[in-house]
Image 1 (cartoon, helix red, strand yellow):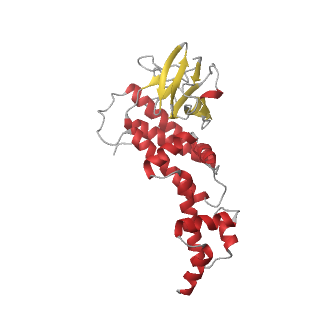
Image 2 (image 1 turned 180 degrees about the horizontal axis):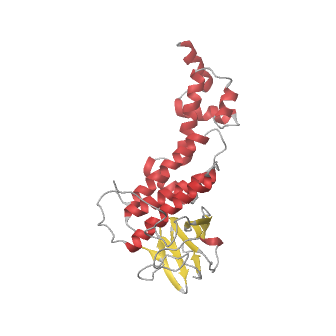
Image 3 (image 1 turned 60 degrees about the vertical axis):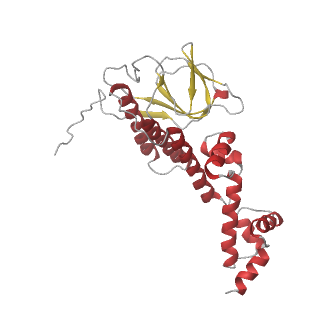
Length: 288
């Protein structure tokens, strides 16, 4: 059986253990300025459309594009739609030396800093970015190494896209469709895990590192409902279970599913189920 030996690397002059200096620093185009770094920086477009000024040349960018800014390269995000600005996953990497390339650099064959990727690679990189975001949102033991592992995967995928012959694109689900479904799935997971807390559309957007406009649009597109209405349904379904089990007062149950105002909770419950919480609980107990 074939195996690996020693510290050999087929892509690097040394052991492939790049240092991740910063990541998951999602950047709003309104907060950037024309600048450069002494390290490699990659920027992955999570949502929106916009432009990038790189070494004096303006490039159009959109969701799924990945930008490579090598050491010394001047760059800046440019706003093209103020109501829905481009949001990017940004990472800075050092201690990296690919074969036949300058240290801390990823040389692109045509010199264009916007890397053209297959849908398959876009899907994998998008998944890695969200895994890193999740790790940084809830820090746990070993976080850096999990983040480094995801970043190493991103870098290897990028290296393959540059050096290896690209595979023929497989016909099937598009990257945009996959990305939207993935984001909506993550939003639903967030709502189900945090329904008892105060949640707003802006809060969901902050946790997902996306804009409220984009979240509302794709959530409605995929579920037929808004994120807040979906949250209401989750809360009321939980309240219904608690009422059936007679777990506390109406006020206590309202608080447990995220409503400080018991009157507002009762009004919503009657709107969705046709009866008040008090009547529903009495009917559930009487049928036992």
